[in-house]
Image (cartoon, each protein chain N blue to C red):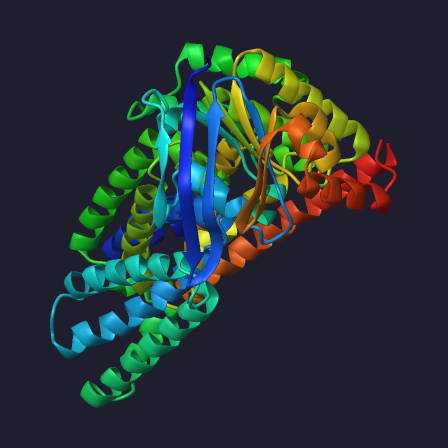
Amino acid sequence: MPKTLIRCRDVSFSYDSVAALRGVSFEVNAGDALCVVGENGSGKSTLMSLLLRLKAPQSGSIVFDGGLRADQVGYLPQQTAAQKDFPASVREVVMSGRLSSRRWQPFYTRADRAMAERHMEKLGVLSLANRCYRELSGGQQQRTLLARALCATKTLLLLDEPVAGLDPLATSDLYQMIDAIRSDGVTIIMVSHDVQSVMRHATSILHLRVDPLFFGGVGEYAASATGRRFLTNIEGVGNVV
Amino acid sequence: MFNALAEMFSYAFLTRAVVVGLLVSLCAALLGVSLVLKRYSMIGDGLSHVGFGSLAIATAMRAAPLAVSIPIVILAAFLLLRISSSSKIKGDAAIALLSTSSLAIGVVVISLTTGMNTDVCNYLFGSILAMNRADVYLSVALAVVVLALFALFYNKILAVTFDETFARATGVPAGAYNMLIAMLTALTITLGMRMMGALLISSLIVFPALTSMRLCKSFKAVTICAAVTSSICFFLGVVGSYLYATPTGASVVLVNIALFAVFWGISVYQSKRRAAV
């Protein structure tokens, strides 16, 4: 029986009395890949900030397993406009992922450097280590940020729209890397619009529209009414493989 | 040339001004890198206007200018950061509000007490005569503090500047670092304001960072380049103002503009050449 890492019970959150999340309950076990899907404004980002402990739920509870402190969680955020032209080298960006493990020590250790190199190599950005972040392609930037997230990850990795704005090739590359990370024993929670690919890379699905519409395994989701409606709608839109 | 320099430094007040100015430029450049990249450039401008208002009040009360200005400007810095992080009033509008209010208060207070005279002009555009011995000690202390904190927290400042959400999510107290930067900025501005002028001091924060960003490819390079160019520009500006009898603050800004143009030209040339290859 796998260990439960996060237990979310009846969580609600609203902005100025407009509900963003209502009565959401789910569990994440060690080794899971949970994918949160839903339309814009369905509360996905709010759920993400709750899981990152940037906000506290207004009612209900999120219980983290005892070992899951903030400095054991890696996070791949959506890029901001300010970052796109930030003058920092790839190495500097990746190294900053080690910061949470350093606490009050001001400088990085040799072990930090070695770890950053290892993750850069794993994600294929080691050859770009001294290049400027703003000169990279979207896919390379995303892989750099994923390497940074891995530097902070011990048990759990949260991904916010990891493939947004990437071309198909970079997208499938990134999914392969996420699969590889999961096979190393890291639990993954991912927010995504890309339901088609998610079906192949997740173990369970949480479908939100302020209220939770579905929570369960991938197979059950494909068979459920919500899943069928969502999946067929999208198949009609584009020529997704 | 050397004769002119020797002559210039034979005046004690000019030597004092150069020492204070160099240290203030150095601090402003270091803090500016983070402020510009976080899109907080206007905070410097807002704080200098608040500084103008508080200087006017200090003069009216016949109190020591720094003793009054420093706490007021630090308070304003905290306030501005608070407002920027809540979305009710947008940051830029809040800064405009605060700076015009303090400017208006300052002008009214001055005209009520001493009458509109050259004082206002000195406050707005700076005066090289304003620096006394206490300012020299204070600026040395400030520079030591800023340099030490910057070196000690360099990695954290980089992380918080690049991605505040990530830093927060992984357990780095980003808010505390923002406050630290705002407080040091407030100190730097108040100290440099009487020489550079309330309207011109924010150039020391913005120009070195923007100039270095034209050419440098890493955060470390941008930081070092900003510190070096800022000091050089200040020195050339002061010497220029002595030789041609121009106002100090404005001369320093002109040198900064020239250097920015040069760096910008080189970066355009480089990218053209890269495109051609």
